[in-house]
Amino acid sequence: MMDDRWISVEETAAYLGVKRDTIYKWIDRRKMPAHKVGRLWKFRKEEVDEWVKSGGAGEKDDENQRSMRDTSR
View 1 (spheres, rainbow, N blue to C red):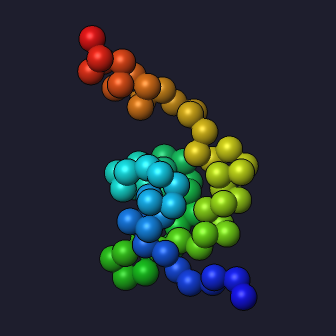
View 2 (view 1 turned 90 degrees about the vertical axis):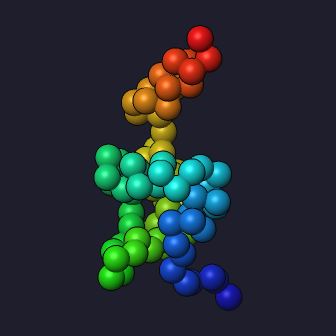
View 3 (view 1 turned 135 degrees about the horizontal axis):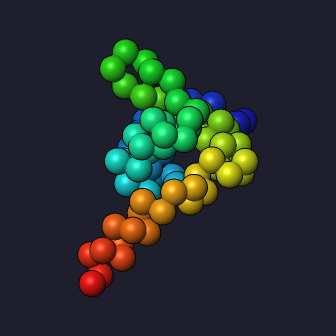
């Protein structure tokens, strides 16, 4: 049976191997599929998988790369 439950920001971050802050940025800037339930953001793994496969999590801006380069100087 397919796991059909809603997952949290923390679970989504762990699933994708990124920080919670990245998830919030992706919701805001990259239209990551998320659903507001009360004050919490919830996700469906299937929707997140499709979004990633369609390039939603790709490096569209170099914000992360810039900050990494700036701190390594």
